[in-house]
Image (cartoon, helix red, strand yellow):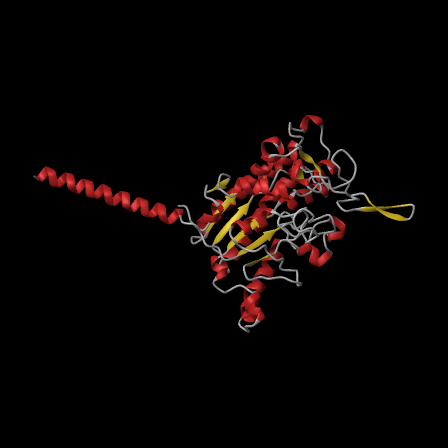
Amino acid sequence: MESHCLKLKLVAACLLVALSVSLVSAKTSSQCNFPAIFNFGDSNSDTGGLSAVFGQARSPHGESYFHKPVGRYCDGRLVIDFIAQSLGLPLLSAYLDSVGSNFTHGANFATAGSTIRPQNTTLRQGGFSPISLDVQFNEFYDFHSRSQTTRSQGGVFKKLLPKAKFFSQALYTFDIGQNDLTSGYFSNMTTSQVKDNVPDVLEQFKNVVKYVYGQGGRYFWIHNTGPFGCLPYVLDRLPVAASEMDKAGCATPFNEVAQFFNRGLKQVVVQLRKELPLAAVTYVDVYKAKYSIISQPKKHGFEEPVRACCGHGGKYNFNKNIGCGGKKKVHGKEILVGKACKDPSVWVNWDGVHYTQAGNKGIFDQIVGGAYSDPPIPLNMACHRMK
């Protein structure tokens, strides 16, 4: 009898443990309900910031989806657009765009050409945006407080600005860092000098994430930087020896620097998890996703992995002086020479710098499920902290 009771107790204990495990599993497997997205970044996620300040991205940008230029340096949607749509949210309005914007479900502070660390040159001189990551945070800080003061007035403001609780429930996305590396090379720095700057760049990135946390941000989705050694604007301006090109047609030295940066960024994410006890921080390896569609194009449905779809001349269909949509005068008449390819859906690269909509979709499809994330959780579960 005593033995039978002991067996019953053991069974009951096992059932209790199993129930506890299943409850924990259910809790961590439940989908998140992000009511808003606040994005920080560069042209990879700019939905109209730079265009609002320095002039609209010209045609044929936007042609594949929007059928007109809409501030994106792409023929259609960006990865951030696919992220928003997958979460059932509207496409993000650029914070700097004062015409037709709706910030009910978030705002986009990214601008093309942005860096983490402020540049010492103007946009005209170096091609990089003055709206660096620290400035983007300042914009967010101002938006956070002023949006609530203004929203309290009711009327149309209530319909265009986010609820106060959204700031702690939102997903905060970051996609920035590539320009910090390329700006060094374009300023005639050596690889060693570019790498020497990385610790300071990453420290500034870490500080901004902590500032956002201080404003109530809790859920962070952080992209690493991509293989910029595969992009025409780098390959054309910074040629390397044939022995330094890989089988995919990419410049190995530049991709190694990108991976050096990414190793440091991953360590920063580890530190942030320790320093921000209430935060869920997901590190997303977009480098791997991007290199996959470039090095294995047929597997992903592409025919042209490296050359630019929209451009003019040269090995890579790229000319820094005549970009996508560029014109030149012939016998006193302006002629469009920076034309788009016939079918951007089979090209990875759009304009020598950015990916096509199809390329962005190929990247998004790989990262949305969590296969390239640390911890390995899908986008719609990025509110869960993994201990």
